[in-house]
Image (cartoon, rainbow over all chains, first blue to last red):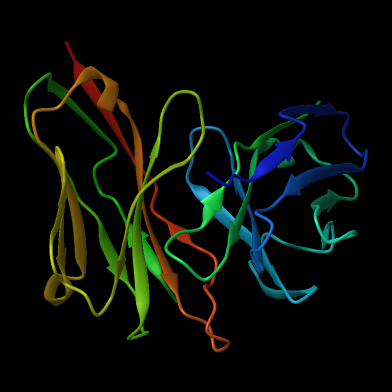
Amino acid sequence: EPEVTQTPSHQVTQMGQEVILRCVPISNHLYFYWYRQILGQKVEFLVSFYNNEISEKSEIFDDQFSVERPDGSNFTLKIRSTKLEDSAMYFCASWGGSYEQYFGPGTRLTVT
Amino acid sequence: AQKVTQAQTEISVVEKEDVTLDCVYETRDTTYYLFWYKQPPSGELVFLIRRNSFDEQNEISGRYSWNFQKSTSSFNFTITASQVVDSAVYFCALSEENSGGGADGLTFGKGTHLIIQP
């Protein structure tokens, strides 16, 4: 069964540092998404990406965040200058027009 | 703006009891999709079901069943004869169809923490 993969599974970084979270969506999917989940809270939509550009973004997705599909297989989320409140689980998802959005296993980001 | 409300923060039942998780949604769109996801302690999001707004037929899958009622904007989830392995956080979510025919990002409810006691 096709799956979305994410690396790393856990990232620890210091406040103010840049971090890049990586995702490999399912190969023939066209829509890609990032979500975050602060510990113990609900899953929140960050951004969707289609045809090499952002198609929708939430209020959370401010100038500190950016997304990129650098090589046709990877889909990355960059946080320029991390804050303590960026500590969360970050989920990547992809959608190919069928039944569901496929979620990756998540990357746990810890900002110290 | 779309919104999903899961009023039950935590439910605790004894194994083999039936349990219903409530989900109420708000949307202005006529075409939308409703989802249920399970999040076990390991943290991944496990897809359970998707329902289209124009398909109000209830669905049963083994011990799981879903009751979709547009009149009350609800999409409730029932587990029959619950088992300890059903213990998890369950999220209801909503997605609207965007102008390009694709799927917008999901709006999740706050989740219901289901505890099944042996």
